[in-house]
Length: 171
Figure (spheres, rainbow, N blue to C red):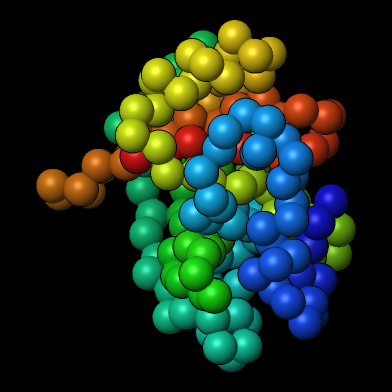
């Protein structure tokens, strides 16, 4: 597990983040890391904590995605998330969902903030997930978030190693 607070203590935060899974990203022609997905027990409390450390402000949203398909099965889920920018990365705080244990499995010991996934912006999520599936990384979760005219298409890929960092493709 990689803990976000450990990353924040690094003298070169950006370089350290960019070194995560660098060989894998190079071998699979991934774009630069756009997002750090962090699992926290409580989004509001975590946002307050990180805002005091100079990260944020966080935009907090709660609700249900338009689509959440986990291992090919559609589920009804709801949750809460917070978004902010820090040192060139989008920071996404994620609370465990109602209706799925997808984030719950990544909760850190003693409430520590865990880096659950790395997010990458791509032009076409379906085309990219098809390539990843062929290379042996199947889609774990396929989803769509929508708020007014804004829509986020995303897919979480199965991690390379058990309990490893998950890759998220989004557009």
